[in-house]
Amino acid sequence: MATNDEPLYPIAILIDELKNEDIQLRLNSIRRLSTIARALGEERTRKELIPFLSENNDDEDEVLLAMAEELGVFIPYVGGVEHAHVLLPPLEALCTVEETCVRDKAVESLCRIGAQMKESDIVDWFVPVVKRLAAGEWFTARVSSCGLFHIAYPSASDQLKAELRNIYGQLCQDDMPMVRRAAASNLGKFAATVEQNYLKTEIMSIFDDLTQDDQDSVRLLAVEGCAALGKLLEPQDCVAHILPVIVNFSQDKSWRVRYMVANQLYELCEAVGPEHSREHLVPAYVRLLRDNEAEVRIAAAGKVTKFCKILSPQLAVQHILPCVKELSSDSSQHVRSALASVIMGMAPVLGKDATIEQLLPIFLSLLKDEFPDVRLNIISKLDQVNQVIGIDLLSQSLLPAIVELAEDRHWRVRLAIIEYIPLLASQLGVGFFDDKLGALCMQWLEDKVFSIRDAAANNLKRLAKEFGPEWAMQHIIPQVLEKINNPHYLYRMTILQAISLLAPVMGAEITCQKLLPVVVEKTVKPCLVELSEDPDVDVRYYANQALQACDQIMMSS
Image 1 (tube, rainbow, N blue to C red):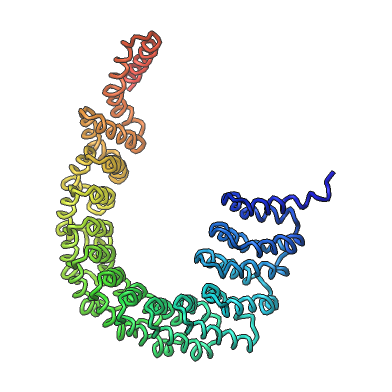
Image 2: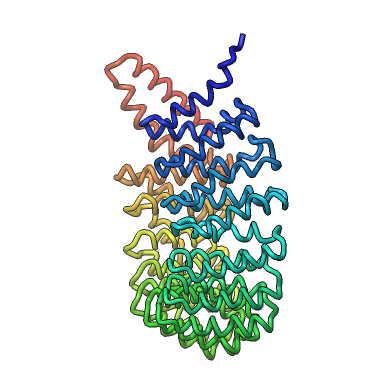
């Protein structure tokens, strides 16, 4: 029979383990909160477990983080949405701790709970939590409060909404930069819940203050606000309020702010619309492409294709291409690498003539770049150029550089070429492939790097699929079988791997007639002959049995 003390047992375990010196035991108990809550029942969870957790929030960060995460999904264990408010006190306490990841998780859990609460409960319970945190003496509470306004605001009365907007405005002018950063970071989410008439007045006033903050860490977060607010405002308001801010930010004294503008530029263009982007943001983008800081040029170079899609081909050729030419010989290898990763996408935007005249010379210079990542980025996107200029011109201009890269001293470059070969083969056609690239594919089977040999074996399989078994029987199989006598065992292993990969593609007949006899004769039988002379009688017996089986296979094939 159950005793009266039995329901107390789970909570007793929890309390014991939470106070244990071993952090792992404390962590385990926190992660078992749902099990303990089920054992206790909803009422005792509300009255005993949750108050206990509220009082015991002075622990290691790992334990507090686990607690913040568990409480976010705890509504079913306290009696459903009607009682969700009981989970707010422990999470409110966690919002004030020093460790950022714990606070962030507590805010996330509060938002998850708030999103499920009734409107009346949000006004009665959630809004007071937001107001208490926003008025907290320690900056950590005020930082956490910034992430909760978008949950509290929609359910509030008009008077309470005005109070919340006022509090958020004060947080944006807080003495602590960390609080202003949090306010700037969450402004977009809060603004999305605010009515349109207040958005144009109060929220834009708050935003203007953040854009002129003396801390660059606050201003760079305001850049993200540009894109978020731009999507909420009417087009004419966006041009009036957001566009001047973007242009100013693109000339900001802090390179971090300019970097953020370069990184977010396409989103900012979407916010202000293509027409105004062409008119006002092209000069700003050109400045960013020619910025003194390499980090800014890297971010700007990575967006060059996306930005060109907004422009007409004429504008792109006139304004952006001169900058692209400069960046292709930039002193920073990372700038050239960022450019190489996207420049091929400009070909469809500019069209055939501009690609041949303007882009091809840039492609060639980047293909010969001394930094391997630059060459890799160009190789991996060649198909985009092929669609525009055609295979004949591509093979004349770029193929010699590709063949040169196939013997590059950096094995990752060789690997990228191998992986691109089947696509290149399908585009070039079988005749061109046999003349120019066939020998390379065999050469890679005896590369010094295992990854290259492995990729080369898989490459042969993909080529056999592409051109068919008859072509493979004529151009691949004889050369592969010749290499099975290589004196180095690693290369022989690669050949065996290649044969095993080719067998399913070639079909049963060719495998039995051509591949299997060679494998048996050259690799299996020599081992069995050696084992047939072993001192142990059993080894000799089974080796002879195997030799007889091999002979039967050879005769049948």
